[in-house]
Length: 118
Length: 118
DNA sequence: TCCACTAGGTTTCCAAATGAAACCATGTTA
DNA sequence: TAACATGGTTTCATTTGGAAACCTAGTGGA
Image 1 (tube, protein in one colour):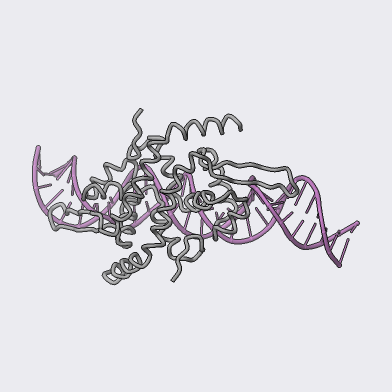
Image 2 (cartoon, rainbow over the protein chains, first blue to last red):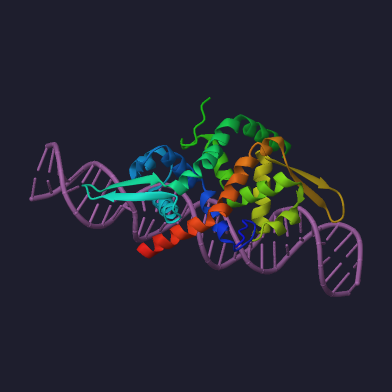
């Protein structure tokens, strides 16, 4: 079987679509550091809504990148952790976020040049 | 100045949002290999619409990741190429796409396990 | 007793983004 | 004269996104 992200109906396209997502990158980056609970993630990833966070977590769990464990406490406790498969991605995902932080000045300079031309 | 992708209104969040995009990943991967024309990109990235491709190219150009050169031929020729700044990203971006291709069997197995539970 | 609050979601609703298809200018070829 | 090429933009229907409200179950305070 040959996989090719450039082919329209290759299943890898769907996976790329899931990983190439702002919220997924942030979730995986945090979980690669340590196991966290739902509201912990929600507080640390500023601006994410509950709806979107739960959707992203569900999809990442379905793809086997993170694991969900619920405890019958009161109120209920739910822990999310990274899986072995997810861990093989974290250096790549982390590099993306770090690149944005490291190159922000250059990007802003480029934007100003572009906007000045137009 | 401290940049932090987890902060809601940090400019890096906008950059991450641009990079963490299926089409941007595919465009940057192709342009890191060689300069290409608009319709060449459109044909090689199966399933991308003209509208979205032109939007993505414009944003990547604004951020200084790719360069656009137009030639007054008939019909007009437009070339897109990667910039030095863009090149600092290509190993990371490329790793993302390759990860999807390499790990597809494991992901599909995880999905089947998940769907069987539900 | 009633209200407020917790965790972890789901539902609702409206705004924004996406995609398919059509359109455009210019000029070449059949 | 009709059809096709490039590199887009426009239009419109469908999806997706986010904000806010709601939900269940239980706990603590007044």
